[in-house]
Image (cartoon, rainbow, N blue to C red; front, top):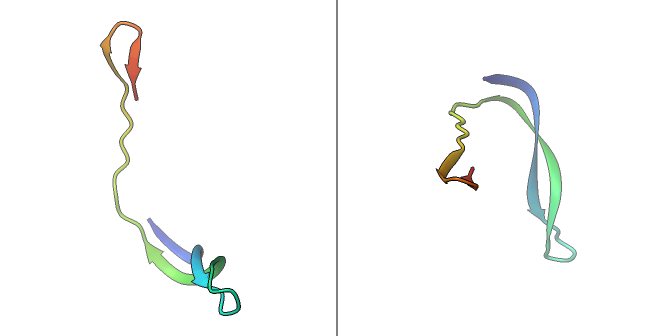
Length: 50
C-alpha cells in the first residue's frame, strides 16, 4: 500500500524533563508491505486458542 501525506506518532525526548514525549511527525510518502493472518484453533472441545 502506498501512502502520501502520512503522519506518524513517535517518541521524542523532552529537553526540559529528559522524559519521552509523544509527537506527531510528517512522513510524506511511505510504502507498507506485509501479510496479516488470523486463525482460531480448537485443540479440544471448549478450549479455543486464537
